[in-house]
Structure formats: C-alpha cells, structure tokens
Length: 529
Image (cartoon, rainbow, N blue to C red; front, side, top):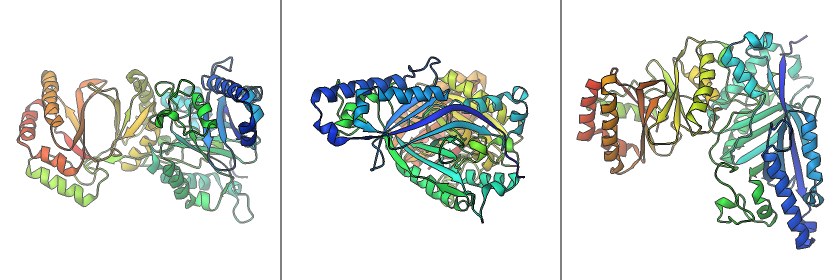
C-alpha cells in the first residue's frame, strides 16, 4: 500500500461566493438600499477586523468577482468551523443578504504535510527551532494585500491509466519537486493559499492565488499545466477571478463605480477607501499561505531542494523562488560581459560572469525592522543546517523606511529555494532585479571600523552628486543590523548607459581609490538589469 505522508491542520477557510439580484437592487427604495449598504459595510468591516470571534484570531477579505458565476467573494479564515459558520450566518442577518444569493461556496482547512521535514512530524518539540516556527506559522496564515485573486478547486486523478494514489511516495515526491521548480520563477509575484478540502467539499484542495498583476496568475497556472503532476494527474474545477476592495467601497461597488475608489478619484465620505494601514491594497506582504513558494531546504541535495511542506498530503500545486547571480543579474550574458570588460578597463572589479562562488537573492520589505529581523532569524536558523548556506542578514536603509533581506548561497538552486521562503516575509514590496530600468548593487562593503563614519559621510556626498545626474532614480546605503561595518549600496537607473556614465566619471574614480584604504574586503558589483 502506498505511503501517505502525515499531516497537521491549522485554520479553517470559507470561500463565500455571492450573486447580487441587480433587478431587485435597482427597484428597491433608496432607504432600503442605504440600509443594505450600511449593514453590509459594517458586517464586512467587522469581519476584516476579526471582531466577530471571541479569540480575535483569523482573517477576512472581500473581492469583486468578474463574470457570470458570482459578483462578490468573501474569504474567511478562522480557528474553528464553528467560527466560519457564525460568519456565514451573520451575513444572512444583514439587509444586504436579501439582495443576494449564494451560488456556491468552498470549505477547507490549512494543512502542512510530511513529504518533507519528517523530523517535525516525528517530534515537533525537538525539531529545529527555525523549522518548527516556519511550519507552525503556515498553519495560521494571513490574507495577502495583493489586488487580484483567483480561486479554483482541484483534485489528483484516480483514473484507470493514471492514478495518483497508486504511485509510490518517492514518485509523488519527485514530481512535486519538479512542479515546485516551475513555480520558483514567480517569487515575489504570486502569493498562495492552498488548503485541504478532503472530506469537506467536492474536490481535494482549494487553491487561492494572489497577485498585483493578474497576468502573473494566468502565467503560473499555464506554465504548471505542462508539469507531469498536472498534465497526467491534475483535475480542476471552475475558476473565479476578482479584485479586492475595502468594505467602505461596498456602496460604490453596488452603484457601478470602479473600485477601489481611491484609484479612480472616487473618494467620498460614504465610500472612502482607507489607503493607509487599513487599505486593502498596496505592495504584496505577509506570509505565503498553505504551501511554501518553493522547495524546503530541509529536503536535502546539493540544491537544498526537494518538495516543500504545505498543502494536503503534501501535494501543493504551486511553488516559487528566485535568485540573482553575483555579477550576472537578469540581463543577457553577453551584455553583462561587456559591462564587466568596460569596468575592468576602469579598474573596477565587477565579479565573474557565472556567479563567482556564491549566489545572492535580495528582497525589500517595509515591515518594522525588529519584526522582520525576528522572522529572518527563524529562517536563518533553518538555513544554517546546510553547507551551501553562506549568509542571510537584514540590512536597514539609511533615511528610508525599508529594509533589505540578503541571502547568499553557494549554489543557484539553493538560493532560489531560499528566495521562496524569504518571499513570505512580512511586507515584502519588491525583489532586486524586478525594478524598472537598470540596477547595480555593490555588495561586500566591509568597512574598517575606524573609517565607518567617514564612509557614511562620503556616501552622502556621492548621493548628492547622483541626485543631479541624468537617468538616476535612487541609491540606498544599507547597513547590516548585526554588524554596522557591513554594508551594501543599491542603485537604480533609467538605463545602463546612465549608470556607466557615473562609473566613467572622475568623481567615481576618486571614490573607488579612496575606498581601497577604508574597506576591509574588495566589493563586488552585481548588475540587475
């Protein structure tokens, strides 16, 4: 009999779809519509604030749905099924419910599995602290603040020719590892919530994808259709796509206005969209949901790859990750070689074209630095079990409300795997190499302690010079939270030639010459075009 991996369960999930009876809505007296909006808004706000539970735990969000299958989607996550039931029934007590019907819904539970990290399931209390925290946090996820959502249910096929559940544990794990590799290209682009619905609903999993660009959702689903785990063993239900809006925009939505109203100049007292801390949108943040975006470093191998802990029975449909090569970046290799040759002529060391001896991934977060550091410390404790891990640290930007998480590995695949985990950190807003234009990153600026303040002063001087240069967008000096002598400089330009104009300048040449005396190690320049 094939082996079934052990599982552990967390919060329960309800996808509550609603259609609006538009004829009844148009024909209703204005007073009834106003009451429905008032009670509907209060209901949605109360649940997004998680004020409906005695434990004050969970998450909720509301989305407008495109197409004929539904008009609204409310996602609830709560500690128990009873909490979900109360949330569902509470809506029926509002005046808005009289104008809606529930064409479908989906019930599931967040789950992690034992395809990887068997030590966690054998004895969670004695498992590595970083692993234990990671696994436990996945059981109580948050809803990302990305704008767009796609939901679909899926199962693994039980056909006469192709039966997932007849396969050996090892064969299933291998296919899931390959499947995760496909998803690594979407680190920082897709967040996901994958929950088991075995015994709860018509399919085996409910998959919810979140992104700020709906084409990323299309792309990841399309790419993964070609993986064997999907092409032979995947069975899918209906797809639903929508966009998140804050409860305060309910009236605007029912009036046919574009929502969120804050993006369309429709901010009113009645329909105001709180775009600050209460906003429904902004940059992607939070922890990924259900499954990890990428493979678990615990699964071993040179790449620290393998399948990841996550969805029911460990069969997550998705994964993600990504890393930047030292001195290579995302640009064409020939282009990168040309840059290095030109810099070499200027006596500037720009790394080797194939990654030197390490690979780096860099993500930016707007989370509180202390909170971010605590999260990173947990992951780093897990990373440090592997010989390919070089360094993971949090760097604070001087004069800017963001931090960088830098993770360096000896192999590209290990760095990509780590990127999947790091992309789940709080308030991740971008990944180095994804910004528009041409980026450079000077890494390994280890400053001699006696020159630290001089280095800061020189950076300020150079920064003033950069601000006046054509094509310069921004430059940050970031300092390691644990070692104030360890820094890196990140610059973004409109185009490569703009950056090269600075590298050719006399001011930069003088700065490089000065740096030879104050730096303990030779820095490397990483290009992220």
